Image (cartoon, rainbow over all chains, first blue to last red; front, side):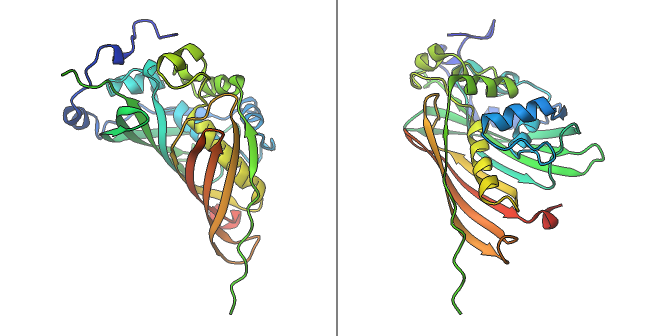
Amino acid sequence: MSSIPGMEPLTARGQPPNITALSERLCGTRFPGGTYTITTDIHSTVTALVEATDHPQTVHPALCIVTALNAIGLPLDQVCLLAEANINDGPLLGECDIRLHRPLQVDEPYSVSGQITGVTRKRSQRLGLMDLLAFTLNIASSEGKAVADVGLVWILPRPEPLQ
Amino acid sequence: MIAPPLPIVTSKHFRVTRTQCATWARILHDTNPIHFDVAAVEELGLGTETINPGPANLAFLYTMLNENFPALRVIRLKARLTGTVHSGDELTVNGTVRKEEGQHPHAMIHLDLRLVSTRGVSVVAEAWLMPPEEYQ
C-alpha cells in the first residue's frame, strides 16, 4: 500500500480522537485559501473524462469543485491531518451542496476562501465508525463577485475505540 | 386546466477506468491512494478496484444535465454519495423532473437524479436549473 512518507494509517493505532474536543477545536477554522485558474488544458481533460462537449466558452460546472478543492490553501492530506485523520485511511466525499451564481470562465483567476463548519461522529453498516467533516468553500471572481458556494461533507474512517 | 407534461429526461451511460480515477486524483491534487493503488483499496477492505473520486461522480451528473437541458444552467446541485464507484463500473445517470416553472425550453426546473452503478445506487441528488438570462 502506498503511503505518504511519515504518515502511517491511523487505523493501525486503534484510537479515534475525542469528537467533542475535535469539534470544538475545528468548527469555525478558516482555511488559508488561494487562487486557481481553469486552463484550457484542464478544461479539455475534464470534459474528456466526463464525455462532455469541450466548449471553453461554457465551462463544465464540475470545474467548480476542481477550483474549490485546488485553492483551499491546503492539500487534502493536510485537511485530513487538521481533523486528526490520515488520507491513507481512505476518506470519501459523502455529501455536497454546490450553488453556482455565475458561469465559470477559462483563464480567469478565482479566489477561494472557506471554513470548517462541523465535525460529527456516526456509525455506518458499510464503513463502520466515521467522522463527518463539513466545510464550505466560497469562490469569487477577481472583482470580488460571488461565483459559487461549495459545501462538502467528507467521510473520515475511524478505528473502533480500544476496550 | 390540465398541466402540460413534464420534460422527459434521457439517461446517460458512462464507464469508469483506472486511468480516469488516477487522472481525476491528479487534477484534484488528491493523494488518497484508493484512487490509484489497488493494493490500498484491498487493504482497506473497500474492494478490488480503484475508487473514482467523489467529485468525478458528480461531474457525470452535470454532463447528463447539460445534454438534456442545453438551454439551461445548473445553479444548484445537492447530492449524497451513497456508494463508491470503482474502475470497471458501468454507470447510468437517471433523472426525473419534479417541478417545472415557465415555458420549456426556458423554464426553471427542479429534478431528482440518481447515479446507479453495477453495485447499486452511488449518488442520490437534486438539481435546480435556470435560463442563463435569469442566472447571470
